[in-house]
Structure formats: C-alpha cells, structure tokens
Image (cartoon, rainbow, N blue to C red; front, side):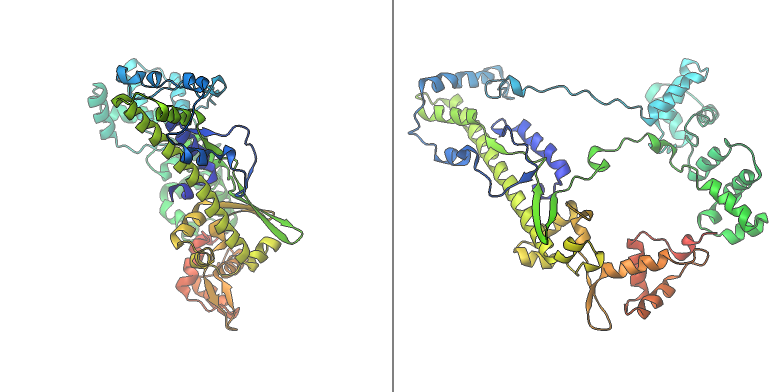
Length: 476
C-alpha cells in the first residue's frame, strides 16, 4: 500500500533508498525503456533460482574461491555490524559519482550580504544577524522584540534593549527586497509604497492602506471612495498601484522542490485511430534483480563443512537480505499491475473523454464504480486516484479529475457534477464584475437551465472552483 501511494516522481528515490539499504538488491543494467510491460521477460529467472537452491548445489572451485565466508565475517571481529562489501560484487563501474551541486543564493543570505552596508560594531552585527535569522521565508518577522532580546541574552550572552533592536529593524527594513522585516501585510505593502516616486495616486494609495486597510481587503470600495472623495477613475489608479505590490517579498528567492516544479505522468494514453492504448511510465522504476553475489554466498554456506555460530549468524543475515530483496521486487511488480488494472478501468469508463477530450463527456464516476470493475478495495483505488497523473493528447490530469458524483436533471438524465461546475464557472466568468451575481442569483440561473441544486451546494461548488463570494469578485 505504501509503494502504491508513491507517485512516479518520488518512486526513484524510494527504490534508490532500498538499493542502498539492501546490498542483495541490484538494479538491472541496460534497462532504459520508458514503458513497463507486465508481460516482460523474467530476467535470468532470479526468483526461481533462489527458491530452488538447496543442499545439493555444486560450486566450481573458482566460485568457491571467490566466496570466502571468513572474509565476509571479518567485520564481526572488529565489532562493526555495518557490513561493507566494497567492490567485491558491484565492481568499479558502480562507484558513487559526485554530482556538482547547484548553488543558489537564498533569501537569508541575500539579506545578510547587505549588512556590510551598515557600519556596525561586532556586537550590533550579531544582533542584526539574529534579527535576519528570525525572518521567515516570505520576509516577515514572526518573533516579538522581547523574544529576540531573550534569545540574544540566553543564546549569545548579549544584553540589549528593545529600542536598540527596533532601531536595527528599521535599518534592515531599508534592505532589498522592499517590504521585509515587518510583522504584518499592511506594514509590508506600506514599506513598498514609500519607496516609489511621489505622485497623487501614490499618496492616495498610502492613505488607503494606512487608514482604510480593513475596508480595502474586504472590498468595501464605496466607503473608501466616499471618505477620500475619489471618483472611479482615480480609485482605479490607486488599486492598480496596490495590486502590483508583492505580499511575500522573500518568496522570490524560494527554490522549488524538484518533485513540485513539474509533473511526471504515471500513465500515457494514446488514441490510435479510435483505439485507446495505455502504457505505464516506468522511467523512475528500473528493473530490479536479486544479487548473484549474495546467491553465491548462500550456496557456499550450503556446501560448507564448518557451521559455527559466526557462520550461522552470517547466513541468517544473507537470507534476510535475499528475502527482503525478493519481497521488494514482488511489491514493485504488484504495484505496476495494480496501477495498470485501475487505470484501464478508468479509461474504459471515461472512454468518450479520452477519445474526444470534451470535459462535458465525462460520466459521473465514484471510487466504488472502479472498485467493482477491478475487484479492488475502495481504499486501494483511492490511493491510486489521489497521487497519480495520466498524460493524454488533451493534457495531463490527476486521476482524481475523472471522479465526480451524479446529479439528476428534470429529464431524469444523470450528469456529472463536473458539468454543473463548468456551467457555474462560465456564468461567473461572463458576469458584470461591477455587479457580480450572488449565490442566490446563481442558484436561480442554474435552476432555469434544469439543474435543481440548493444554494449551499452552489456555494460549495464555487469554493471548490476557488471562486470568492460576490463582494470579493467586485471590480471597478
């Protein structure tokens, strides 16, 4: 189940982890295909060979010389339980290579580099470093001044005052990027505005954020306009200035995680003249096999005459590693089979979509439908659907995209709730942003189209589409 949950983007790391922990598991050399074939060749019959090994295994003299259990047990005398097999079974070609690391300047380093512009003595420099170290990745200062003073006193034996810390904070607030080292969004935006060239719209923008911040974020624009005596055009200029500000100034230095920066599809669906073809991406799931070296060690023990305590402990270790390797290989194969079996059922159920790419062609489908088609547990189908992606000629989608509940029309026909969301999205997209539709009005419009749903359901669908309430959709 744990392997099944892992997406393709992370499976490579999981397999590498297992390869490093278990020397009895090896990566099959020369397997570079991007598609996994469940009916593929059984590489060298490794599983069968392991299962059939017994006392009657004959070893050649060369093999017997190659496998010396006394050498294998040398770590026992040293008290080292971390068995080191070196190049005996892996060879020089498999030595770890050092990959050059990509060096990037992060947010904190960028701010620390600017400390040199301040003429500070060593003591104040350490206080400033403590302040910068307390900034979060977005650039905000999340610790109170009193807490910073305590940290300096107990952690670095530096006695300071709140006034001294506040003075250094003000100096750091002048660093780039603009808007850092503040406690809240309002201060962050105001700092950025105060660095801009002076103008009437800029002064109005500063007044709006300084005196009417709560009204602004709640989009009570009429009230602000009346208070400042601004017409629509003037207020629109003010808004245009504010919306160009960066609410998270430190985030521009954030480095995206490799697995989050792009999507690696787990499946590929091709339309071959009306016939859908499914394949599984195994780029990050190499062919694995049980180590021949470990099997030779097991054979040597079976033929060995000496069977003292140390040798028995060694063979128990070897057998455990062989069993673990065989189990992991079987688990990977089972994972591939379950993925393909589940995706095939989804593809068959939503065949019209995969042929046409028309979102309206998606049929109502729940986890139970696929569980019944595949004879798998609903929880198993859920694990597959929640973490996997499929690439089609119409785009790459998460499997969860294809699941939706059914809604009955006046005609008695069942449609997917996804269709209702599409229509809801279209209605809101075409509305007059000066007077956006309320949820009650949206409900009435859907009822007119034959979709009888409650207002609270409309609100739920709107939230699932990440669409705010009418008041927050209002524009000038």
